[in-house]
Image 1 (cartoon, protein in one colour):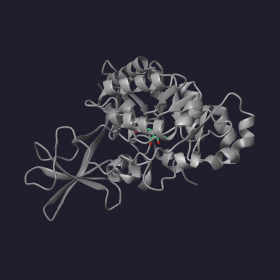
Image 2 (tube, helix red, strand yellow):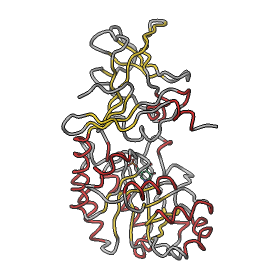
Image 3 (cartoon, helix red, strand yellow):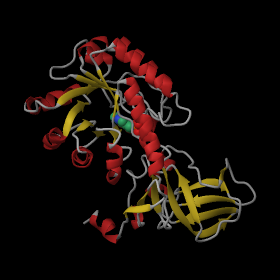
Image 4 (tube, helix red, strand yellow):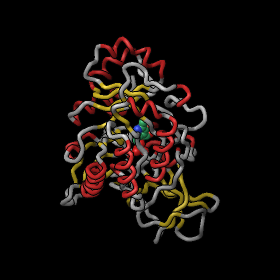
Length: 377
Ligand SMILES: Cc1ncc(COP(=O)(O)O)c(C=O)c1O
């Protein structure tokens, strides 16, 4: 394999196919359709691989909907917290399913809905089932702007609505899905009877090693048997590219102050691994041990190459002292990373490469000064 440029995100085809096989088998065994949430992963040059296993994707905006149409070759299942009158025609053009977040949005778009016979409209419900501990990722935190609660909905679906959508989990478990389905059956019985489809959102991390896949399949089958008129849809994102690739970077300086050693690298947490700071979580570094705090020996913080003071994380211990020029591999840096990067500080964006099953490295994209300049006037 040729040495990748530094920095570079590298997606491993073999690992992607392993996840896709599991996802396809869950869909086949459970009877639910599983579609890809672009918000988590949208490296469209790899869509031909993904299309071998699944047909559809979910979009959260006009651009994602257009990408679904152009690059997945199928209209999107679209949900956005709010559509504007200006962009709704574009949403309709590129979507097979459009889910509203509120009753007021249905009324605002009522006229436009009339002319869209080939689009199936849905409504996001909020089952108020709150299990996600980090508020930034909790769609059911108190006062959440997402979805209509059972109280607000009443016992009838609004006119023109034939689907229901909920999204309550983040890196969640099958057992949690089972519990949320029971609460929906209890709190939205009439809406469930009237609806033609139910989209169970994302957060189903079925490709994680210790995820209870059998429980997921059984839960979906049992729910499907209780509601045979409903088409069931799951729209995970992370599960598709969970542990399928990494970000390879280089050490470009080593500094030490008050006994704290920092390796400054040619990437940035805030630009290229934002969830590490947002979630927050400490990423795994290949060949290094993650530490709770500073220790003696070859213990380092890793510092990002931006001017944000908090653009560092600590601590990791390495077998040997780090050296300038040495490569550092941040594991599992595909989902929510490649879609969230930015060009803050004008730091060169990592290239993107696909490592094929035979070990060949294909460079999908590299970035230049023009990419930075073109984002601004
Ligand atoms: C509405 C909706 N669907 C799907 C997803 C994908 O979730 P995940 O990547 O955790 O599977 C999200 C994530 O925020 C979401 O908000």
